Image (cartoon, rainbow, N blue to C red; front, top):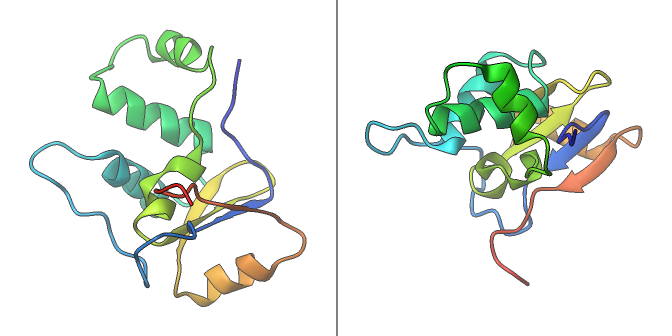
Length: 135
């Protein structure tokens, strides 16, 4: 089974992120976007969910999967999936993602002291969110 989890890692915003300060992803119409789903789960429940939890729950919500979640999750992770480096939170909306030693995640706004502290923490692995455009 594949996993998107990171441990003791900080995902910094993408180099081409247009946000100068973190933004709450706007809702577009009735349906929640992936950005809305990721933000709601992580912002309201810091260090409660792993990346796998967030990625799968967003997938399940977008695809209307409500029953037999364990089987659906196993099938989903039977092949590799995009991790939170691909999340719109870090690519577009200015949020850094910290994964603790248990693989649980929290988000921090680009302009915050906490973001700067994580970005400079030499004990963490540092990654950048994926760029939206090719260099």
